[in-house]
Picture 1 (cartoon, rainbow, N blue to C red):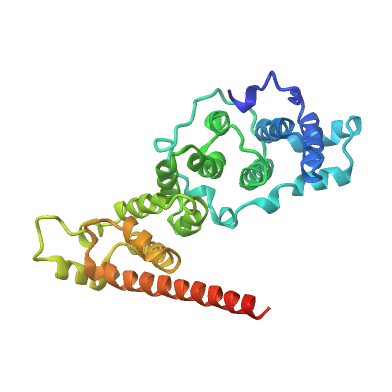
Picture 2 (tube, rainbow, N blue to C red):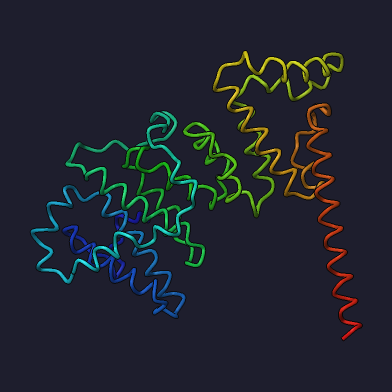
Length: 318
């Protein structure tokens, strides 16, 4: 069910944008002050707030509506300011660096064709996209109907819907699609995106690395063909020596690939790190990272042993 058509939702408000904002203020106040204890009611409030935000993305000329109708609604300046700020603090930091102008064409992101109509201002869309982002980033709230959110966004331009799609797709086991969208739009955010959506699912790191490598000319350089052992060393050397002569975007992608692998070597157990690397990765290229992963794993295990021994000694003294 689309969030734009919540006719059976008792909190749904159609009509002017001012009424929607009034409802949004009420729901936000209830959420932020922990006034809802029943889980079913909390889930309904969250889904209703999503409906309000998406609805306000569609209201044209909201700035012109408010001065004329605000006097008829329970909207004080204080409420409006709190409404403007609400949910923004929950947004992931990488979203601030996502540039809407880098969104791929409509051939990569399907957009439902709709008749032309008056459009909301860019400032209005920016505000409610950010608020929707904050709502989706808030892990303390119940999960929303992700399929409903994505369905409601089909009529929006990719420049408006990209960030929300990136937050939604990994939650419904469509991480590969999300990784492709991100890398087509802004690959420099790959590591920060992975830290959020690969943390609980290590296999997603493997998908992300594979998608980065697919976009470079280094695929055949880093991955050794099964039937060719003679050129492995020279291929690995050429990766280092010829990087400067590559296209700038290719060089940037390789730098991002190294950045992600280095992060994984520092943070993952050596066994897990090796498991997500391609089986045919050239050992000459992988060896420094594998050594780093082993060193970090050993250090963490040593730290755990020291802490455990210290607690045991303190317990005997007491």
